[in-house]
Image 1 (cartoon, rainbow, N blue to C red):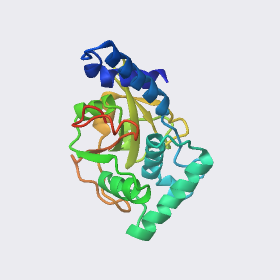
Image 2: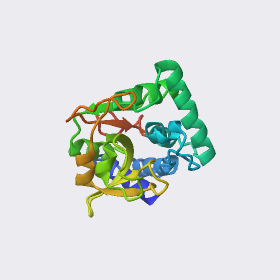
Image 3: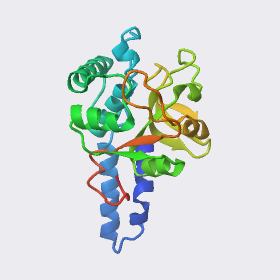
Length: 241
């Protein structure tokens, strides 16, 4: 709750000190407290919720798992291992039925097929050619970020060596003191709130094409931005997501 409240203070700070009356000040504080209670923490699931990594739908389920976490956060929905597994398998079936494959989906296809197609969720955007400032801006706005990466460059000791070449990471925070991104990494059961050095994440950024282990073009980066339903109505032009 404290983290959520701190984010809301940061987001609304430009407005808080432009009030013209005591009534306006009290109104803004009411908004802050309401939103702090209306936004739940980001839930976590590993992409193989019960450790069945032999199932290819789960072994290749990082895109599905990352989006499941993000959408459940955006809708204030709880997430259990049983529900996560059911959703991962259902999304995989949906992708196979409608697009012919559920393996390795690009940032664009993850947003279009999973967020919009399966979940019917529209408060999602894809940004190409990602800069560090893009991620910071999205996080400061209160949004979540999903980035496709070369997982081997993340150097997570809990991955099965050498790590996934194609992986998606959900980022929900940044520690300015340690210069670390705070993420939910579905690639390991130890991935809840996992911290990665910022420069390591930026070096690992790499969008990959949809399909079964297709060649990966060099230099292409992207990120998916997910906005919470209780923040989407409060601002425009990137001030508040």
